[in-house]
Image 1 (cartoon, one colour):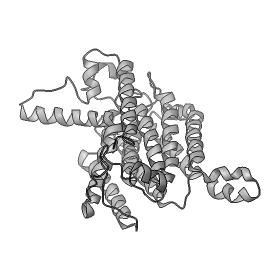
Image 2 (cartoon, rainbow, N blue to C red; image 1 turned 90 degrees about the vertical axis):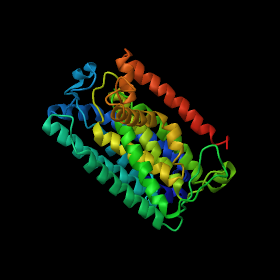
Image 3 (cartoon, rainbow, N blue to C red; image 1 turned 180 degrees about the vertical axis):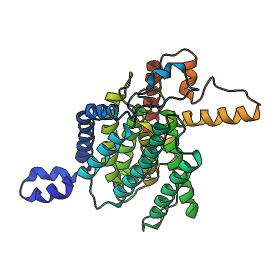
Image 4 (tube, rainbow, N blue to C red; image 1 turned 120 degrees about the vertical axis):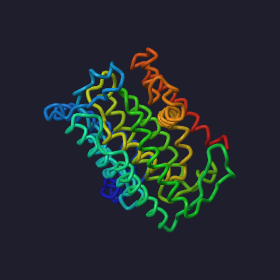
Length: 359
């Protein structure tokens, strides 16, 4: 919005020329989203508490989590509102990618909100059925994949980190691949969101990496030099990623141990879906498995635990899944688990950035 309102005035006042630069608007979006969440966070937490919108704790989870029952939840609404408002404020609204990524974020947020609502209403950890949640997620991702495939600049090829000449072309199968990436990312973040600040920190880190990759993917010269796919209009996604970084860091202010508010499924499903969508749009799908390695590890731990439990007749690989609960069972304090996972996430982000030259 600011881009459309103020940039045309650069002929009168040269200072408005800065609004043409994606870098400036990305920084502006990051700061705006952060400040919005900080300013609204306390009031939001109070409203959730007044309306008794509190966390429902698993009865089979770690005993240390029982004290979290009743802590305000659905904080993801605050993230989504700040993210959406900030993106609309700073982005070029003529860019179709912006509307698509906002659409999938809001849709996945709606799925999570309904899931949270059912949990709170029933006062148990079983909300929307797994099948129903999956069908709704797949439907949204399928529509997004189809819309992308209909665009004149659609390219069914995928790029692999560390390899510059291996770009398999999935053709019509790319839509199915996009669904797997988006739905997988959404559920992986959802599984990670089990400790105070655990999902929020890696989300901000991952979004920061994709901010840079989006800018590079939308710059024909830089994309060619670095030998990464050029995607027309992808640079504007940097503004969205900047808003995501700012909103996540602002939320972390209230979500850090001991958490004053949890994001709930409304937040985790939306944030994961958003990052998966950006990865698909800029053709860096496999990079998400690197920079988002924490999310991948958490999802795999659940898959491995459930699979081994069934084939072994009741045996377990981990003391408890997802993976972060395993360390809690080993005696690690919650803040230690969270900070160490953040450290790993930062190292993975550096590895992801290294793929720009190691190709």
